[in-house]
Image: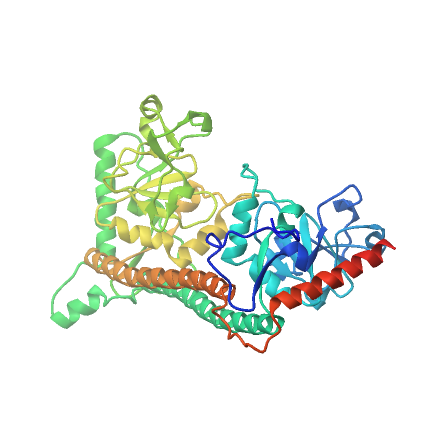
Length: 508
């Protein structure tokens, strides 16, 4: 601690010496800090009105600004009764709890004032730019201050006194302007880059949907009918394939059951469905599935059955990115596996989520064989002659997802039942064409995935570059230094003098 009360900085931990003309100080010297925490005088939710004075909390601090799009308001009468937490344009709002380090500058859009809830209000001196203070708070140097003063408990927490003690590298006022302008210029370019990458990601998502749509409409690869005609050979159309599937189904029933009345699977309702390419036909899931298994009833499997590191249970949330991603905490013991052995997955099964988001499914491979089907999932096995991967892509296609979402029932969440699924129309191509379609889908999606990963890496680089820009800003490396600028030490002495006069005047 120096004689004037400013904490002596550890220059090594804070990145070394400051540029010529700069000086270390504290945030408390440069600003008034006003406690915006909730108190007994703060209004309850019942006091909120449709329009009025903004009631700002941490959730409204977004990208350095106060987002008024989803704001709670209080009346001007209630506002006039409050004694603390009042915000004016130019204030910097800062999170003391939860999202430590989150901050925003209050713009002129709250010209009638606002209230800050569970935030500290940093009101910079007139000789310190709010944008400079904001940039400092969200910079790596500000993050180091958070690490220094965070209480280290399960709930991150700072006090206003902590924030007053933050060590700030103060630049001359003209250089503050140059630094803020440089940050804004660099950040605007990064914003443009991220916006472009976001548009690319959206386009890739649409491209993926277009690939699946084209695949199940016979437009992704040359049809078997067209190839056979060009090569002067015969081929097996899908209606012949479907007849063979149905004949095999009847023979299996006769061998396994052999008594009573055989129930022919219902053909699909093709009303309003698009015309299929030559050699294709419509079939229902009931016609082309050799197995449909629901997960255990809720009374058979409870969360209390889950153990750490046992046999994984496959619920809808584990179906991601066309694969199965289990949780070590959602697993069952060997005893439960034995009790629910009828619900174990077999290689080649298609696991389909029947709750929540429709179209989530994955094909069971050797790794997942013997895992337990969860209560919110269905296990499907395609008949011989229907490629399992092709059927999985059909279930993920835009038309099928839209159909399932429209027909699934549920009040708070969609719930796919067997009747809906069994009646689902499936576009059936010739068997050999199914293989080519699957290969072409996988080729396209591998390209899309590589582009998405590249885009995600660039977004991450942009995020890191923002922090690098802020780091350089407070090392004096982002804007030019001008020897003619008034040194920050003189600026600081003037701020101290003016703040002392102001505080003495307030006490009179």
